Length: 450
Image (cartoon, rainbow, N blue to C red; front, side, top):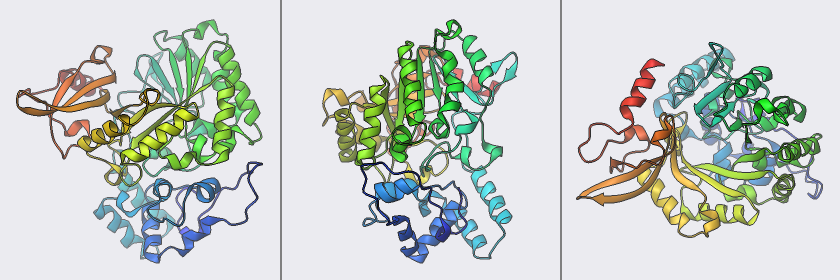
C-alpha cells in the first residue's frame, strides 16, 4: 500500500530477520496510532499526494520513537505537513473531511502532483536517448560517459524517502519512465563506445530478484561489444533500508556472486548507496551487509542531499563520513535538494549549504574529503558551490561544473551574485554585471530544441 488512506491501517512489510538479532515481538509501527490525532491527519493528507511506504526494519530498528517527530529517520520516511504548499495542503485536507471516494482523492492528488515539477533537469525532454530513430523512454544519457537505465521491475523501493526527487516513479504509470527491454539496452550500449559507465537506477534495482538483475548486466561480462563499459553502478537505498537484501534474502548469495563475477571479468562494480544520516549505519545487519558486498570486490560510494529537518548541520555529516571511512565506504557527494516535489520542506539556502559542507570537511581526514559538494544536479549539469568570496568589492558564489552536458564546461569556474535567498541554480544571477553565465546561451538553445 503506497498511499494509505488510513494511517491506522498502515502496512508494514515483514521479512526474515538477521540471525544475530534477538527475536522481538514489539512492532513499533503501532506507535503511529498513539501519535496526536492532528499529526496523524496531517500525515494522511500528505500521503494522499506524495508516495508513502515504510517497512518493518526502518520502523523497528532505525527510528527512535522517543524522539518523535524530530527523529531524522522518522522525518526521512514519514510524511510531514510542510512537504506540501499551504494551499495544496488545505485543498486535500478539506476534501478528506468530506469522506471522499478513493477516486476523488487520487484525482486531486494528481492535480497537486502535477504542480510540483515531477521531472526536473530535463529528465523527460533532454535526457532521453534514441536508437534507430526511436526514443528509449526507460533510459537517460545526459553525460557522454554514463548511461542510466530504469528497469521496469525496479521502480519502487523497500521504503520511500520523503525527499526523493524521483517520487513521480511511484505514483502511477502516467508519470513513470522505465523499460524491461534488456536487448535494446545492450544494443544501445554497443552503439555508444563513448560510454564507460552503466548506472542501474530507479526506484531501486535492488528490489528485483537477482535473476532479473542478471538479465540486464550479465551479458556485459566478457562481451567484446561491451568492452568499453568499464563500470557497472547500482543506485540503491537497500543498504540501509533493507540490508537483508545482501545477507539473508533467498537470493542474497546469488546477488553477491553476480557482483563477484562482474569484478572478475574486469568490470568495476560500484554500489551507489544513498545514506542520509549516520543513524542508518548503527545496526549489526548494516555492517554485515557492507562486509559481504566489499568481499566481492565491489566498492560502495555514499551520497545524499543536504536536507533541512534531517541532516542540515555539520556534526551529522562529520559523524556520517567518519563512520563510512571506518567501514571502508567512500564518501562521494553532498547534493543540494532538487527543485521538485516536497523541496520546500527540505531545501537549504546555498550559502548555508556551503557553510555546512565547509565546516564538515574541515573536521574530517583526507580519506573523507572525497565527498564533493554541495552539488546541484541541474539541467546543464552538476554545479558545485566551491566557495563564497569577495572579488573587486563584490561578494560572489564561486561555482564550477563537476559534470556537464558539454564536457568543455567541466572544471571551468564561474561566478554568481551572492544571494542568501538562493536555493538553486535558477535563483542565481551572473556576477560582475554579466548578462548571462558562459554556458547559458548554449543550454537555452538545446532546451528550446527539445
